[in-house]
Image (cartoon, rainbow, N blue to C red; front, side, top):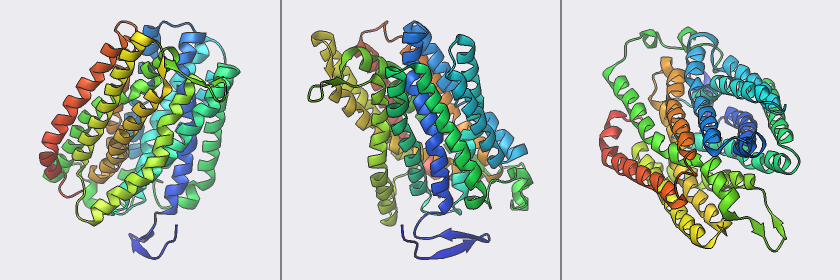
Length: 443
């Protein structure tokens, strides 16, 4: 990307036509961290059901508890970063703990299994809110490139998520689950080394100190009182959290009930190759679509902004909810066919993931960007951690819901997310105007 001019904001040079170099460094770190997370997640349900011999309900409960808690601990990690350690130290701590967790998962036995989950949950709490906060700190206030920057950052997440099931999934399903988990640990090791190499090269001016001890924070920001506008902006964060719960509750069926549907009810044979591809490969479909579509969505947001036709965050959330609802409507149709004719073509699941991905691009990177815009500086990492509470609730309930997969017919099961996301989307659409007013121009 050609950089044509620079300016200086708070004594920091900021790229005008492109993005700060730190964005691409954090992109790489996040890519490897997500490689490790999604490599392990692609195997987790299959490992519990096929190797540990858990029941579907028990596996769904453990899956939901794990994927939920990795979004609860960021609240604690954000608080520790804001008050004591600063974002950079927390990121390194989290990376090392997650590396140990993945390698522990590579060891057989239930004690190692549960210890690994514990290390991953705690490590993610230190890592996740603080790397997103660092991305936000790369941009000055009112910088129109921020949404686009987060969308690019989101591509890093999904490059890792795309490669992980292909590498870890193939090794795990074809050679042995524990070897697949070891590959996830290797990915986290690489991510840790990349972070150690580049943190002071590309992010030297940000994230070194807790916000409340950072000399760069304005004196008035040290006051714990909040203005009326700040309170309303925080209220917007909580309103968007509410809508995101319904999205992620549905979307996160990918690693549980949709994986079971792919394993039991989907024809995965490729006749022209005389080969049946592993179930875990479906976990690469969503990130592949993200990689292909994220630049288009990034360009679209910038073009709309340039023409003065920006869509507000709550309106984007409504669109995202409608898209994921349509994806599950396709699952209802596919389930009805499979219940009468047997296995269905894998093309059904590809279509479902396409609509889910478009919905994700309207919600996830937009949500991260909005939190960095709306959160008062002194509570930046804490509110980023609170933001992930929505994913905690969504993932926990999604896992418990997935545990009921065998108790309902497939068409009945997948109709429930259709109803929930449609209702939430309609509510978000109706409230988009009032919510936008409380953002006080942050868009």
